[in-house]
Length: 142
Image (cartoon, rainbow, N blue to C red; front, side, top):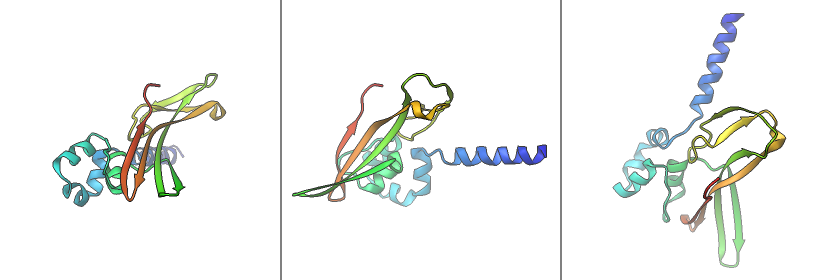
């Protein structure tokens, strides 16, 4: 039974760490796209940064999959916004793990014992217009 629990625990740990995504792991999974980009854009992606004019694929290389996607329809057309979030405590709950949550904001997330007492923070918003990044909103401070 001990051996089974140890194996199960190791498997669970590997699955957790495999889910941690960094620009380098995303670049390794899509080297064709990365190598086709100019050096200035490659440097930004390696730093986990997004720039106006990036395509959705380039944004995914830099900061990964969004936590939320919003679509806004206006008279001038439809825009899509990708939102990257993190969490904080409003007080009263106890942190039992703090570590890498989001590829864009390492160390900003903690697992809390009381999930009703956490606040979702929108840290980063990337808005696309006509298939390219048109604006980037980044929350400053904590």
